[in-house]
Length: 248
Image (tube, rainbow, N blue to C red; front, side):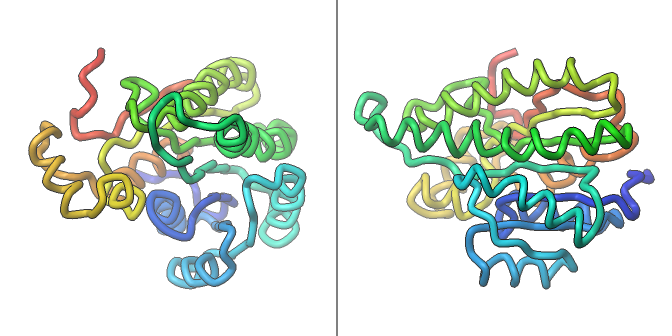
């Protein structure tokens, strides 16, 4: 299938490793001109070199820097037609133990940061009549994970926001969709479970497919939602979880 991404510009944040890197790599393989960003210059330059992307140093919590990132990508590569908002997760812990600062930091990172980029990218997408916006979230928005309260609460807020924006922007040729990863083999999952071996053991016992998902598997789903053929899919939250989520 031709994804219709040849020559289109894609910006993927949080792309130095894990799911963000995987999606950026998949988009580059489809012929997109890919910009990748991360807080760490060393990490993002190494990731960009591996997939033939252009690196940018960007701290998603610096909200006022979002317009500069989008403008820099446009100046270097052209106006972004694809925007993938991917952020790290806040710390886990007991639900009632989080401080107000931790709540505010999580809101800034998981809601305000993606919205700052979207708000600056949408006018150009509207003008050109084409846009694909994809957020990397978590299956926890469907089945809350007690130890990950901050992530669950704020990712759920952005999911609701995407549903409303999808309706508002559909007539402009812009789609907004969300990926809901389950147990994907990443450093982040290893941190949550203590080790990747422990995560794999838990997956064998709890995931119907009996294993962790790979970055390549979720990246393929993400790349499709960013494609031209996915033009009639918007406001969707796609679970990529090996059947882990039990809710309908």
